[in-house]
Image (cartoon, rainbow, N blue to C red):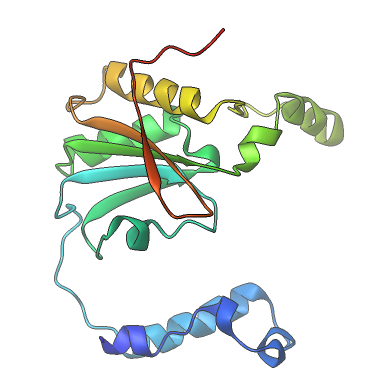
Length: 191
């Protein structure tokens, strides 16, 4: 096992006494980085993903994408946001990934138990009432995981900015089993 991995214990696995220490979570992250950096060796990679793939997924903390997909450092670009929804910023990142850094495939991953299933655009209205300013972004909440994956695949496939739209596949990750279920882009939603 590389030294950098041996010196780094996940913060969530620290003891109760560690959790009671003074300082913020960010302070603990910085301390963990100091331990990591003390054993770090430059892997000699550039920014181009070895496998030529970009993975777009939800930011949910329960999903360890590298472990779930059998990926190693340097294999892919990982782009995450709330819901794994293809927004303008995701298109921006995918465009840079493809045009500047050579990726050709896109994998989209939503998941069961997503917090976006419980939100509505009322979230934006509530924020506006609270802070006095309407957010410039849409919540992009959804009720149907499969249909939202299809919509995300369609957004990628029809973007004029992306060069490679032939290998775009979408999945739902089950947070209880760790299993991916592929979504057929051709199935129309039920009325």
